[in-house]
Amino acid sequence: MGELTDARILIADDEPANVRLLERLLNQAGYRNVRATTDSRQVQALYEEFQPDLILLDLMMPHLDGVAVMEQLPIAEGEYVPVLVLTADVTAQGKERALTAGAKDFLTKPFDRTEVLLRIKNLLDTRFLYRELERQNRSLEQIVAERTQRLLQSEKVATMGSLLAGVAHELNNPLAVVMGQAVLLREAIKEGPLVSRAAKIAAAAERCARIVRNFLSLARQRPTERDAVHLNVVIQEALEMLAYELRADSVEVTLDLAEGLPPLWADAHQLHQVLVNLVTNAHHAMRRLPPPRRISVATRLDRARGRVQLTIADTGPGIPTDIRNKIFEPFFTTKPAGEGTGLGLSLCRGIIEDHGGTIAIDTAPGQGATFVIELPPAERTTGATAVRAAEALPPVSPKRILVVDDEPEIAGLLVEVVAAAGHHVDVVADGAAALEQVARHHYDLVLSDTRMPGLDGVGLYLELEHRFPALCRRIVFLTGDVLDRTKREFLESTGAPFLMKPFDVPEVRRLVHRMLAAAESPEIA
Image 1 (cartoon, rainbow, N blue to C red):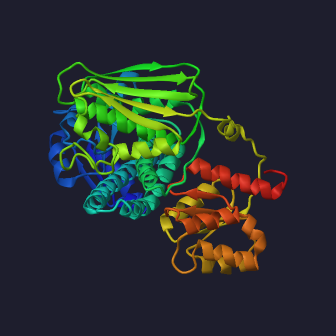
Image 2: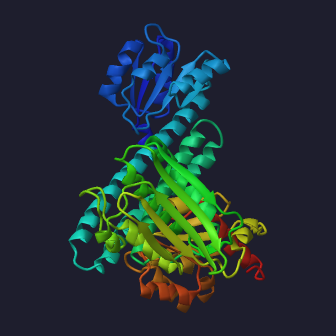
Image 3: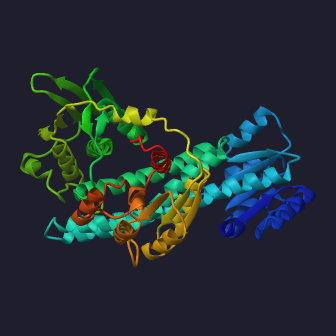
């Protein structure tokens, strides 16, 4: 609650009695940093001086009404400063007017004390989550820039793995916190204008997580996650993500997607990145050319050769013959310094070849470029995704669970997720403390990080194997590390399930429930 009570709140209401009431409510709730004005003409100057985290704004005021005030607020592009409108206008038109002008929420007068404080807390929660995500994004950009410069200066591609692994390790823990808290916030709000805001935070954090996963794929240090994947769906999702940028630059996208394509046995995230890279490259190639600018995406099945084919063609300047053989090399780029690292096409080729496919370029100067990708269809359709979605495990009674993680934010997130199902959760920061707890209490499940100071997750498992062997069948590992060969072989030898950070909150819930249900009913696999 400390960060919330330190929040800067600005009140603008022409009725002094309303201002005093709000100030008293906020002070009683512990908010210590409150400024107020009864003159709407002062709001802009107060905003610039005070830099509030939240604005409580009356809609009906003399001189400037609330809508006019919101239009004057110098909120920087991309910044989230919520405005909670207070109004006596209970009509649908009044509410729509407030929300259209930029308000994030509204309350009708007279308002209930509890409701006011809950709305304020929800808006501030979103404000600080959004700010934390922005900080993580800036950190990611800085780290990527630093690591990329070191990569570009290196003479050996072998250094790439360790450098990218460093990026992943530095970001996985904070990303797990942002993603998890965004999901919990969205679930807590349930309905109202903040639901979409929380969903956007979660989506942006997931995008950061995909960047990290793609780095690890480039370094060949992230195990692929294969499943039955429909190529046309991956294409549509990638183009949906890029739709605004393409539309803003008047790039027309045409689709010719064959129906009835067999599924691929593939990693959907990796194929998504291939699509994004190739379409983005085509977009950038045409950016300085006059219209028409067109990208054509087509799929078909080559039955004779047993291949699913994807083509991405553009109307850009094409690729000169003398560099055509270099475009898939790591670090080769035709973009100006600071606009590209040359890793995109190298990443694409690595992903496609790992999937048993090929990627080739058909281009001529001035005639655009066409990338041709061929992939083998899945030899078998497991239906694993459908099985997981339809999985219905029996309910489990409350259990006692031990969380072992040296990152307080990660441990707190896991406690919140697991305790919500009614389980009792204890937390320790290392393996040695975990062994002390296990000696004193019975635990039905252990969730343990693999990398911790002192006794790490590997050492903890070896001690459990020796002293409490039954728990070795009831342990789940979590890791933010890139798995080196030694650690990967260890995890495979234990047979214990593990989750990569940043993990998905619903996935944690499903895995915990499945493990506990299996303990109650051994016949459950």
